[in-house]
Amino acid sequence: MLKRAGSLLLCLVLAPLLAFAQQIPAAITADPAPDKDFPASTEAPDIMSHGARSNAVFFLASGKGPHPVVLLLHGFPGNEKNLDVAYALRRAGWNVLFPHYRGAWGSAGSFSFSNAIEDTQTFVAFLRDPENAEKFRTDSTRIVLIGHSMGGFMAANIGAHDPGISAVCMISAWNIGAEMREPMNPKRQELFWGASLRLAGTTPQGLLDEAKANMAHWDYVDWVPLLKSRPVFVVESHDGTVADNKVFAAALRKVGSTQVTEQYFETDHGYADHRIALQIAILNWLQTLGPAK
Image 1: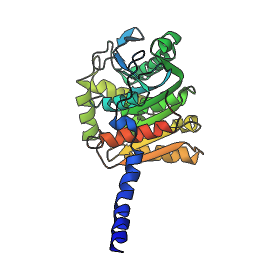
Image 2: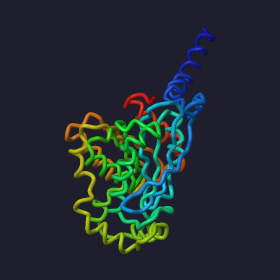
Image 3: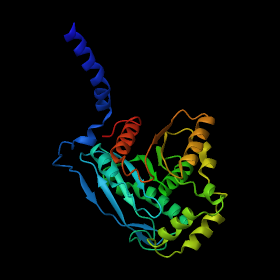
Image 4: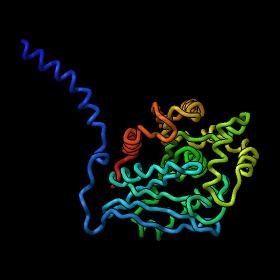
């Protein structure tokens, strides 16, 4: 009886651990089998956006494909680039395009929020170009937008207004319009002043003025009706964006969306101590959209 009781206790202890282990995608812990004809690779295409060259890195999955593709959008100014997520997605069979907006991180031209919106549209057009789709073994009918912070705002904006986008993932998405309706505070001032040092062709006051002038049009909750028929993953953390994220997810459910997923992590805006957890969450969500090739 003591033996049986001990075995039962061991099962009770191990069951949650085994269940958790089963939820960890293989792409987190193992590389895919090499493909000598179509190996995984890293390309660096120049993408022209409104006459200026945008730097980009294209992570190509192994295998002939065509592979579904993620457009991975960084924030303002983009100190956290989420490249660990890009590598995990590539191991899982997804191509990942990681570009820089005009005026950001060596891309030509001037940065502005309006320019970043235009640039994101350009990046989607690049993925849909038949020559690029063939060259990079990409399925241009399966484009998923994943954006962090300001990138989450961009993903919601372009995803809402482009019905050809398959799905949208917003990681601690910054709601520019909603924030601009609030009084100025030291945190916002620090953000704009610090970010502008890393962005070309702009000033802190110029960016603040632009955001304030467009606050009526840049509230992502207004785009909910345009997204209700597609999968949306709202990822939240313990930061200044969580309230807006929750309002957005609740608004999606209110208009009848059955494809909204919401997940909260007790961590900072950059997910500094939850990087693997973030990768797992995104990979598990992408799996619900259908398998990669």
